[in-house]
Image (tube, rainbow, N blue to C red):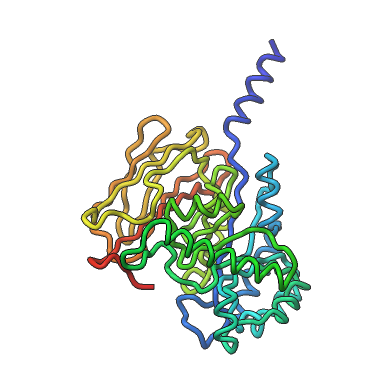
Length: 349
């Protein structure tokens, strides 16, 4: 009888265990003379790295996290990853001493075509090689940083696929030629993707990262991995600390899969199914769309969120959070991205 009680308790604890979660920080510029919306200063970056160290975070490379998740292995309780998009020259100039001091692994997503065309703005291969000595991994951000889901006028689906695939593979070939073969990791320009783009990247062995927020878990779609922006107002450590300690929902599925909504669908909804609700009270979940607080509607392990205000033209996201029952002070976090196009099928950068 005692054994049966012990076994039941053990199984219950397993059912309540939160999935291994990794908070990926996303940066762009490092400096105080660049657009604030995509910038942190060197002092802010060092404060973030110091906080990770002081709070006993394990910082892992994207490749190691991917391998652990694919092997069904866990990561330490508090784990983070560091990513920097675009490869701006100020990342080297302003960040080098911080990278040397902490020697954390981090990933720089680069655009080889832009590196050639605007060499005064972007790092060159020699600078990237030097940063590799201090923890940098170099990955693919497309060749030219364009809106990859956009079709040219009268462009067929096959022609679009060939154009996009060439852009991605040409960039990867140049990265591999310059630095040796690198893991196939891709960051979507502007965080924009659709199902066709996801499928194409998966077919060619890439994992891919967006710009919607939330932790990376074994349940995350491998071609729509979320990241937390850590620049501008998001650089504040008080709010960033909550995100770094957050937990990823154990996703089964999320619909719609595509970010782009139909032109006349100005107040869309989304639907999310999770494996378990054992570690949180569904009634405590709140979803945030701009200034609106939305209450999800639950049916079993599935919740639906209906927007009530019209989406603006461009990119938006709805963030949903709910406190963990087993880990005090930690929140499950899910973010659903949307894009609303204008009448011409376009939206601003």
